[in-house]
Structure formats: structure tokens, C-alpha cells
Image 1 (cartoon, rainbow, N blue to C red):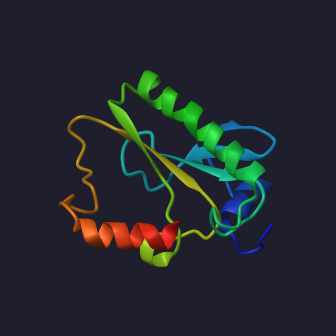
Image 2: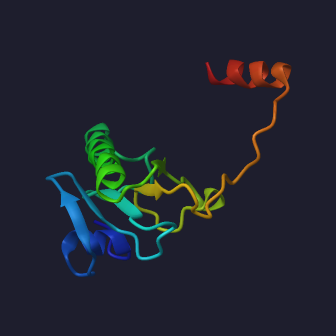
Length: 134
């Protein structure tokens, strides 16, 4: 546990949250700054800065909990879909440095948009980048 981490405080019960699901490795609670109705955060109980540091067991538990919650928001909130988002680093919009997944219900007329505009890439550059990753 990190003593200055708000999510560790939620796990410890010293910071209030509206929890909707939990197990021995992960908990899920309502985001207090929701992008859409039903926006949830799923976190491992054990502190790690982001998914690169999270143990395989914690990441698996959080992902499986998020999977079940995606089904719930679609069925119980009549969402038309959902986004599952993990931000890694301040430049990628991470604001709380404890591994977490956003479950964001999507509705046909909600105002959210992709943060980028999909355009065709340069195939040579794509292949060169892929070569660096293999």
C-alpha cells in the first residue's frame, strides 16, 4: 500500500467510495468524475503504479472483474456498448498512479469521441515499427 495513494485509501476503507463489486484481489467502484452514466473504476487491491508493475494475478483479477462489469452495464444500464481503458503515464491521461481500468458504458447519443481520428497509416512505417516490437 502506498500511503499517498487515493486508491490505496479506498482499498483500506479510509477514503469513501461507492463499491459495486469486489473479490480478494480487486475492487470496483463508481468513478466520481464519470465520463458517462455508470462509469466504473476497477483496481487491484495491491498497489502498483500501472499495468507494467502489476502482478499477473492482480491484472488477471482486475480484468476478469472488469469483464463481468461490462456485461452488467450493458444489461442493467441499457448501455449500447462499453469502453475498457487503461491510461499508463501522465501523457496518456493517467492521473492516479495506481493500476486501474476504466469501464465506461457507451450510449448511442453520448458526447464521448475517440481521442484520435483514424486515418490510414504508412505501411512501410507500420512494418518498421512492428519489426521493433517483435
